[in-house]
Image 1 (cartoon, rainbow, N blue to C red):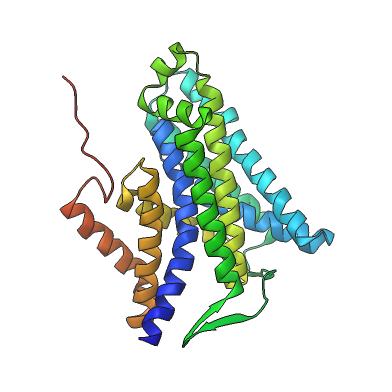
Image 2: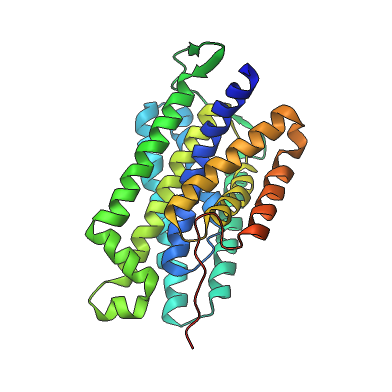
Length: 294
């Protein structure tokens, strides 16, 4: 049982970081019905920016973290402002937007590789304050920080989406952008805000994962991109609570798979479970059936 509870804690820890990125992904899809493939690259970008500011300039670690959040959120805004907004104005097909985010993802990935190289980089753990033992289960302080940060951000985002004016505007835009525009809502501002939040969440998650594993590499964006996609689909695309639960479920499943079967099969088993869930409930755990009006 000790191994079981230890793996459960590890799975919830890494799953909470998946949930954060998945929330950003889901928010963009909910507002635009756009699959943002650049989300994983923003996750990697945030971690590398924080590492660069801390190691190259000798900046305070928390200040470097804060600046990296601002910069990554800014990149998320520019992704919408310079590329996707032009496509919306021209009434381009949604597939064009998807391909654009994929292209931006490749640009970010290759820029990071040119700037930092393809080698794995050590990432400092700023919360290495020891461990806490609860019976035979060991919990590190960085795990506590990750869980507390993820829970806090989930609660804040839930409040923003369901209890504030900007959240109401986001929900109106997701239902019908043209009707929202006629009601006086600045749809472009709502979408820009959504992309900024998505970038901020990706950056925070990337930094937390970097501290957890104490390394970062240029493949981490592609890996989290697929898991975020899986988490959002598992929970129900466009459903905020579903993204949270989906991320946690994927994290727990792959951790148990690595612990009890083999680390080489952790991703495969996660996607097998995803496929089985979708065969039983195609709309995801929290999704609802779409009713087509005729």
